[in-house]
Length: 340
Image (cartoon, rainbow, N blue to C red; front, side):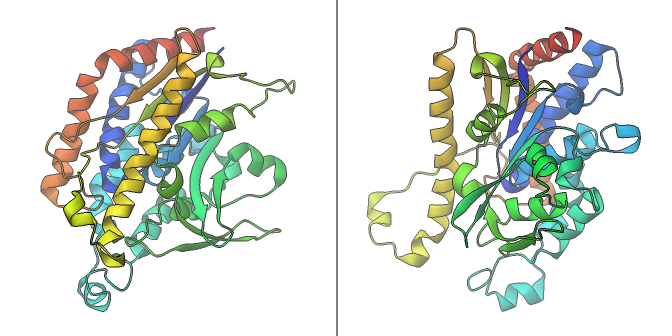
């Protein structure tokens, strides 16, 4: 049976787009299975995410009452539709003190931390219902950090979910760098920034982590992509072109925003290149990539105007229709795997 993986890119408030696409996928699973309470976690074996993708993925794998998933796909995207304007609200005093984000982070992290605390409480990484691959980057140790639910349980190097998500979504210039600690007794410190700087599309990381997963007998669950089904979803892109005449004279200030934009968009391009090359070695591979269009919504990671929130929601629905054939193929594989 193929190992079924869901991977979601980073992208700030644009997480509404994959969130809405997954609302459609969950409804399709409910219809095909005949179970109105079916959830994504009933069908996927592993969740991967970076930044906003990590928040969505953690919501899908979050345990609720009686071991059932706590959030539906619709409730998960509701974090953004209902709280987005609070998360990305600088406030007058902060805006003045930071000079509009010039000499300090653009937004205080208080509301982001509140939303994460309200949603996940004291739930630990080891308590999530499925294996995970959530990406952040430790700027002190200068290494990537992959939050893996399986290792957290075995190695006792555990984290509060709300803390690791805060670290994975600490986008430079937007939110303050996150200092988080693993759970006692180790309580190791980590100084984290947004995982999008190293793997905004975490599908390749998920592929590598999946190769390490073992079943109850100690056997590997997957020996390559031939034993996996990966659904990878982006957050919408509109690649901005930079002219040589402009860029050749940029200094530190001039490069500040473009370098983040290039890192967040260029990384996924490289990941998709490698994933397609790996997929090409497998006949009839089950690697699916959905690169949604913005459909008039803003490319900005923090445009939380009511108008743009509705545009993002609509873009998610439009892209779900556009990729209906892909979603149906995924549903068939997921439902089929559950019946075997």
